[in-house]
Image 1 (cartoon, helix red, strand yellow):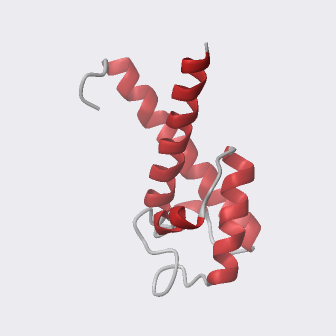
Image 2 (cartoon, helix red, strand yellow):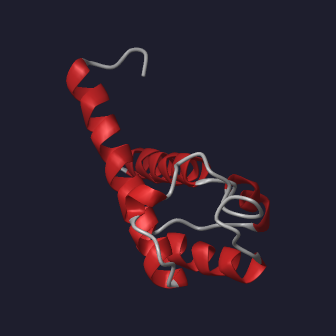
Image 3 (cartoon, one colour):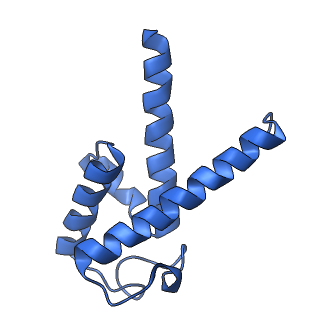
Length: 106
């Protein structure tokens, strides 16, 4: 966040928090998990020993992220789907790319 004003930094933090909570809620709803959003640690693995999700769940998460946040996901992007934090990082990067492209078109 170097080179940002305090307001810009606070806005980015608020945006990240909103994306994180929205993502958790959508994953819980889509996968019908018996959890509350605050019960999912942002750094806990989504698959294996973390939430214990499987490959079918991964596809559901991809569909959720694409439809909820309006970003495209390729096979190469699947490495980002390790934890809530890595998915949020991915979403933020894609949204930033979209904003930059829109600004170039203006």
